[in-house]
Amino acid sequence: MTRVIGLISGTSVDGIDAALVDVFGSQTDLKVELVAGRTFPYSASLRSQILSVCSGEALSVAELAQLDDAIARQFATAALTIQSEYDHAELIGSHGQTVYHRPTGEGERGRFSASSPIADAEMGYSLQLGRGALIAALTGITTVSNFRSADIAAGGQGAPLVSIIDACLLSVPNRSLCIQNLGGIGNLTYLPCTGKGETGDNSQVSNLGDGILGWDTGPANSLLDLAVEHFSDGTKTCDENGTWAAQGNPCQALVEKWLKQEFFCQQPPKSTGRELFGVDYFHTCLVEAQAYNLSPADVLATLTELTVASIVHSYRTFLPQMPDRVLLCGGGSHNLYLKRRLQAQLHPVEVLTTSEAGLSVDFKEAIAFAVLAYWRVRGIPGNLPQVTGAVAPVLLGEINSCWHSWA
Ligand SMILES: Nc1ncnc2c1ncn2[C@@H]1O[C@H](COP(=O)(O)OP(=O)(O)OP(=O)(O)O)[C@@H](O)[C@H]1O
Ligand SMILES: [Mg+2]
Image (cartoon, rainbow, N blue to C red; front, side, top):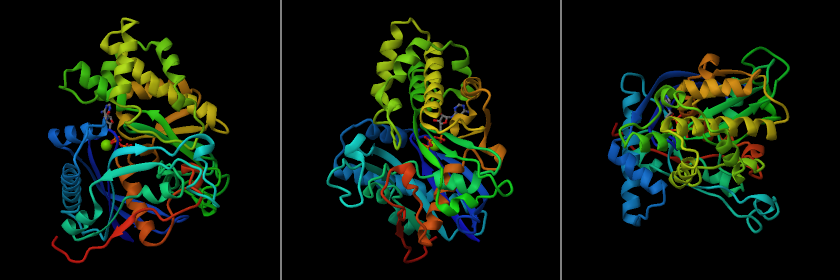
């Protein structure tokens, strides 16, 4: 058993999810036990600084360095706090805070070949702040960070990276599943029915991901959060439980129009971020909503419906078949209106949560980065080429060893 801390702050920029995890086994026999999980919200000022950078505000290199270290310090504090009442961790896997994500080029230009991996493709770029070396120095714990860059260098999107972990921890023999994460951005992992063994058997991953698919589906909460902030004059950050949207009616004409957007039609592998589904996109939605005289509740219901429709459209268009069951995770799984609409649109597919399958909806992503760090130090690749589009499985993350212990 190895005790590992997983740390991530996602595209919602709501705060750092920290998971203290005991990890057992390797891949086919991987097991995790969540010892403690906690979200450490960012201060309002750090959050707004990060959101400004995400929306393209110019920054000097000196300011970038300062922000990088401010984030690393918050991540280190989260790690030290989560383990304060427990035996300490041996390893940290820190995803950091994404501030920029440029997906790999689309179409033929983006298809890497092993013989000329870079020449004929437009390479992706993904920047996470909160440097691992500082986290390692401040915590006294070896820290794996910068998980996306090796996959991107191998021609991949660098995302989603959790698919193989989903396969190891959630596959079942008698049902095909979609694990649908609802963070700022939505992403899915499709797990075909393994057709053998007991529930919890993950022997299918011995073939490193046969039949497993995954990609980003589009916005999940990013536009909703922006709308809530706008309509509440900055007094609220999210539509708590979806109660505001539930008071409105979705405008189907707008949803259908928005669904024609290129990203939704694009063939996987694909990934996205706040660069596309951020402030500018929201303002366009708002302008278009005015033509329909929508109330704030109607706009929220319509944006929620866009999340729902983009997920359903993605499944129907790009999966070999609809799954038997969908397991939701991420903060959006607490949005009861969103969940209800997904259940209605996906019927007769069952819609539950990963918590109901034994894996916390709130800490699954942080747990995944703890496992990816554990794999990295054991020399086990973490990406699934058919999911990210990389030419090969590669080791994910850079190891920042700790040369002392101040902690
Ligand atoms: N009770 C709730 N009701 C409605 N929405 C919620 C609730 N709790 C959280 N959320 C939504 O979930 C978001 C945070 O989810 P989460 O932390 O999974 O996303 P993230 O940080 O973008 O992560 P990632 O990009 O890694 O998936 C919040 O911004 C909010 O929109
Ligand atoms: Mg979050």
